[in-house]
Structure formats: structure tokens, C-alpha cells
Image (cartoon, rainbow, N blue to C red; front, side, top):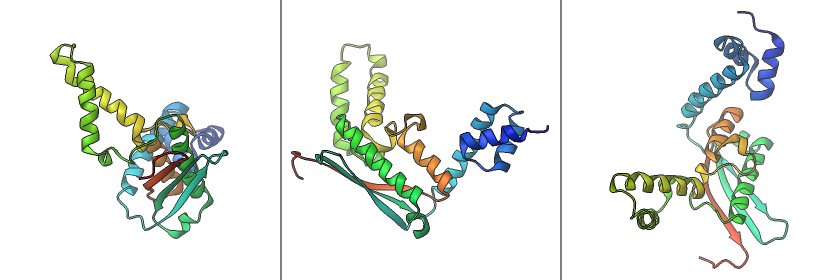
Length: 204
């Protein structure tokens, strides 16, 4: 089928994808703009997954200090090349992540770790023990499911990649936003570590 050039441009504007990719997506979707967006997103996730196995040997340390000087964040985001590390869009991404962490910290949900795998086992065990007490009066058959649901909620609230991206909730989680950025920037990107400082907090 023939695809209207205006429709291609509209899809490009909404997704940032290349013209040929947009045209192909619209053909696959029979000219339906929303279905084409879904097609591009699904294809993009596959491409991002391929890139995620590539080594990251460069990077940038982004930072954010709150206007009152009482809260500060530094975050290391790694990429594949010095070229990207010097790229303004990449550095804006790093600052955005630092600002996200600051926003969550200010709201009482400072992330504990970058990924679920990094959450200490003893902390998970402690949380589970609390949840098990909370559902002790529930039927035994559903207790484990409820507890697991609460654990998943805990991860979404306190694990950086699982948190809803505070700077733009339409992008979904920080992890989803990072995958989109991998496609836009064209290199594997990894949030390596972060630190959050708040005046009056006990030093470790």
C-alpha cells in the first residue's frame, strides 16, 4: 500500500525513528499510526536488547544540587565510546537521572540500588517478614501471592531501574527510559552507580 508522506513525518515526529523505519512500520500496520508506533517500540526493544550485551568503556558522571543546597546527587552512566560520553544529549540524560534520584529522595523514596539483583538479601528478607505479618490473617492459599505482590511493589518504589521516571512519567520506568535512550543514542548505556547526599543525614 502507498503510505502518505505526511503520515511518515507525523510518525517520525512522535517517535524520533528514521524515515524508512517509519514508512516500513506504517506498511506493517496498514497505515494505522498507533499500531505503527507499537511496531516501532517492539522492534526497538529487540534492538536495545542486542545492544545491551556490548561492552561499556566510557561514560560521564552527572550531578544535581537542589536549589537550597540541602540535597545533592551524583550518578555514573557508562556508554561505549568517548564520542557519546562527550555528547550533549547523553550528558543531559545523566543529569536527568540525577534529578530523578533527587526527586525520589525528596519524596521519601530514594532508590536503594540500581537493579533488583543488587538489593541486599537481608533487606528483602526483612521486608518479606513484615509483609507476612501483615497477611497472617489471610487464607494460606493466597498469602504467598500477596507477599510477592508487596515485594514487587517495594522494588518498583525503591529500585532505580524499576521506578517511574520522575522527570517524564510518560516514558514509564527509568529502565524503559534508558532502553529508549539506547535506541536514540545508538550505544549500550548502563547506570553504574549513584550516591545521594542530604544535609543532616548520618554519614556512612
